[in-house]
Length: 359
Ligand code: GGG
Image (cartoon, rainbow, N blue to C red; front, top):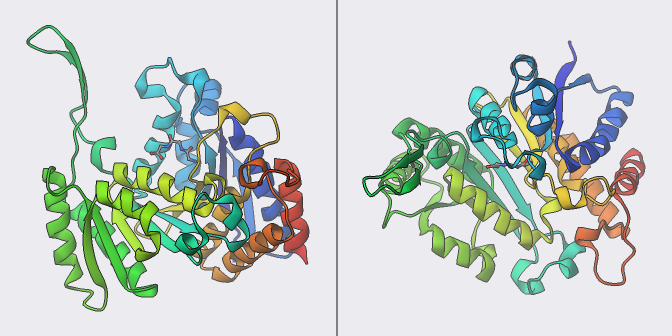
């Protein structure tokens, strides 16, 4: 059997630091005999610097050929003045669209070991385990037309188009119902149906898709209410399915329930479970180069890669269990430390993980 071929795209700022720790985990797995190999490529600002485009042809070719992709984070102030078409974010949007990675799985767990790091009361978050499914290749991120123009009054205006088609909603709907079926059999579809035409369609299609899954209880919630309910009573949710922009915002909000955005991994899958795996956090330019970033979301993303793209849920479970042990042993990067707790760096957290993982 040939090796699984992983393309690693560290990206920008802390992307390279967190990825170095994830590679340590791959090295352990390879040394144990897992049939994996990897190569590195550029995405985002790093790709713009090296090749003049955030998703250059060399990365496109490697990404299409890879069995899975592991990504760090893109973006940062160095690139803020670039035209939108070549900004780092167009690299991540470009690869998602190019590979058809329409289903973004963002689990949000409240680790009991981090209960003190959360701003929420223990009874609100204890045992919390939510899966947010974000549609990833449609919506206002990709809708056309978009741009800038001068209106009839002579004022400059910017415009974007929110767009969803029935097939786009159906395919994320099926992924969501199937995920809910394997979990608590509850699916909450989040939209803004009282205002947006895309959301009216979204809701109609979700109801239709739901007829194939009579064992899953479907509910609907407006996004503004969902944002409130996530902080008021997050345990009411099991699986949430929503569009690209609402999912981006709600999953960052949910990360605070987990204690830190540095703890949330993600998987972005195509119809065949080929995937791109990345922490949900960004490139954190303010702490880049200081050995301060939390590498655990990226390491947990390695676990998701083994589960979804390589059908090795056992390795994902071992990675999840090791994260818990590392936290239980008291290892803390700054984002998850309480006042007075010893803070370790990115490299030290990676080493603590690997030491425990090898046991
Ligand atoms: N690892 C996540 C990351 O780099 N995010 C930066 C970004 O531009 N994200 C756009 C999006 O997720 O919608």
